[in-house]
Length: 476
Image (tube, rainbow, N blue to C red; front, top):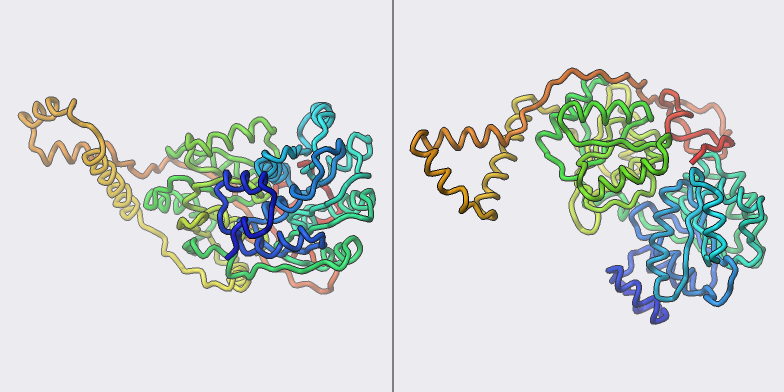
C-alpha cells in the first residue's frame, strides 16, 4: 500500500493531506493519482466511500497554476450536496497551495454566486443545470479549462443530466484532461467516454472492496403496514447512536420523521423540496448529535459526508440495486463497524436477490423482534447507563441523598425505580403512514434506454426524490 509521500507531490500538498489525516492511499487513489498526474484521461469505476474525491482532487490541484486568474478545473456532480462536499474537500487539499474551489448549484441565489465568481476561484464544483446557466450568462468561461471531472456519472445519467453534460463538454477546450468516475458503466456512459475522452485508462475498484466489509447486513421480511412498529422495536433494541432511515419518497420521509418524533425519537427529515437553509440546519443538527435519526431520500442523501453513523435502516428497499451500496456506505467507515437493516415486503424478494448478486454477499434474515424483546433491549441500555454513571461519574454529592433513601426503602426497590425511570418504555402512540406500492421487477421487451438503471418501479417515481427518466432535469 502506497502513502501520499510516494507520489512525488509538492510540499504544500503533502502538508495539507497530512493535516487531513490521510496516510495510506486507498486502492482507487493508488491507481488514479499517478495516471492523472501523468496527464492521462481516466475512467474510474468506484463507489462512494472509496476516496475518489482525493483520487481526482490531488492531481487536479497539483497541476493548477495559482498565478492564473482563470478557472482551470471543473467538477460536475449530480447533486448540490455532493458539489458542496467536493468543494469542501478540494479546499482542504488546496489550502496551502492557495487553490480555491467554489461550489455552484441550483437553489442558491445566482447573484451571490456571480459575486463569488468575481473572486477568481481556480476550480468550480457544480451541478450540470446551474453550470450551464452560468455558461450561457457568460459568468463562467471555460476557455482556460485544463481538467474536467465527471463525478458519479451514472447518477447524473439517471437524473436526466446527460444532455446538459454534453452541452458543457462541447464548451470546454478539446486540449484538456478528462476524468470520469462512476459506480456502474451503462451504455450511455460508455458512449459519452468514447466521444469526449482520449484513449482513457480504465481503473476499477473490485466490488468486494466497496460493499461494506465492516457493515453487518440484515433484512426483515415484513408487511408494509407492520414496518413502522418493527422499525421502532429494532431501534429500541439496537439503540443507535446516529442512524439514517431511508424512505422512497418525499412524502414517506415527511411522514416517517414526524411519526418517529411522536414516538419519542429525536428525528429530522431531508429531501429535495426543503430549502437550502433548512437542509443545512438539519445536517448541522445531525452532525452535532442534537438529533439521533436522519430520515432521507436517496437523492437528498447522495454525497453527504457524515461520520459516526452507526446504523442504516432501509425502511423502503432501494429503487435500484446500486443505491443499496451507496446507502450502506454511510456506515462502517474508517475501520469502524456498522449495521444495515433492510425491510423487504413479500413482493420485493426478487429485488433483494438482485442486490445480493450485485454485492456478491448473502444478506442474513433477521426475525421480527417481539415487544418483550424491545422492552428487554431498553432495560439493558438503562443498566448500561447506570453502570457507566457508577464507574465514570462523580456521584459523591448524591451520597447523603442515597443514604436518606436507604433509611426508608430497600436497596433493590430504589435500584428498580431508578432503572424504570431510565428505561424508555416502547411507545405505542398510534401512527398512520401512507402505504407505498412495493417495487416490482419489470420485464424488458427491448433494449431501449441505452443501459439506464430502470426496471424497478415505485409510486410517483418522478416526483419523490428517487430515480428519474432521462431527459427530465430536476431542480436540485
